[in-house]
Length: 432
Image (cartoon, rainbow, N blue to C red; front, top):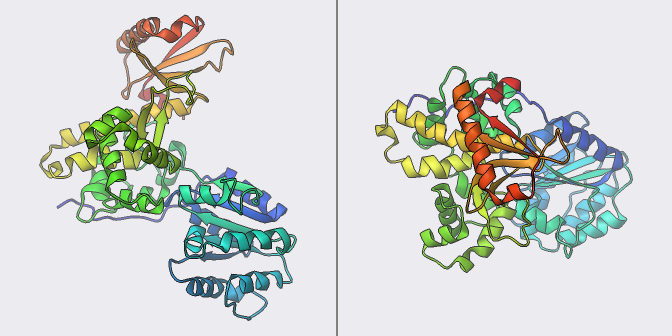
């Protein structure tokens, strides 16, 4: 029996200063604000915290009949309204909002639940936004399904296209915010390895207990009895309307090392063309990310590599799923090796995130972890290699020599003579 039985802690609210500023600006403009971000990213907590400071009204939509949805929204906010007239439908509800004497802020969370039950709601809402919303009032529509929010607000044929003054995406938080929220030392490799297992999703951070090791963390979150993360991929895919064996099978293949569409198709025993639409849907949902070699256009290249975007979900398919049956029999050393290898891939991503435009590069002659415009030389490139360990001087010089040699072999070097080389190791954490 593992030691910590799915213990989670409530963490302090940290960071999100940019998002709070955007919400303040939206309140000054009024009209419609759209907020989206995957489940557990902290979207609802951000909105509630901001609205509590200005007396805003909040309702989280439920999955039920339209009449029940209207009644629930009204019940959630009726104490803050100046009228007690009960709405029978959405038109009545909008009319009640228009009768309020003071400017208001209203957030309808999980808005896609409402449109799933009433496909005409976006058109009705469009007419009200165009002609009925009172001046100085702000309606916030929030949702967790990236694909559904895109279809509702970014598709040119959608009734609500162009109606929002701002579309605010609440994304995962960074390593520095993670350390601040969890009380960890950023320079410690153990801190980064914990981050690599939970990623930038604040809900997962609640399982990071003081004084516990990274093995303790993953056992509590992934391998314990009825662990919190056991059904998480299915929940995320269900949010995106991608529930089913095919999407899970693709992620299983990618998590176990199949990065090209041909490799994924081969492992699934299907034709590569059969996966094109599903791969695009998984990217639209921000579940998969697509890597292209530096300098190549997505419109012309077929040299695409796929990776699971979120570190915690990457751990699920790369470590938890392949090893869940045998994990209890592993030594502490073997568990740490598996975690270390996973953290190395997250560290490589993190290094690229430090430089705008940084991408991997590969051709038939060489592979490079990082290539980007050199921030110190506008005419040159920065070429880097990441190693998830602290290198001594001999190791650093050996890896640097190897990087220079690989650069000389790759096709990109002929077009870019002005290059600066850099080795990224765990000592990078000392500068956060």
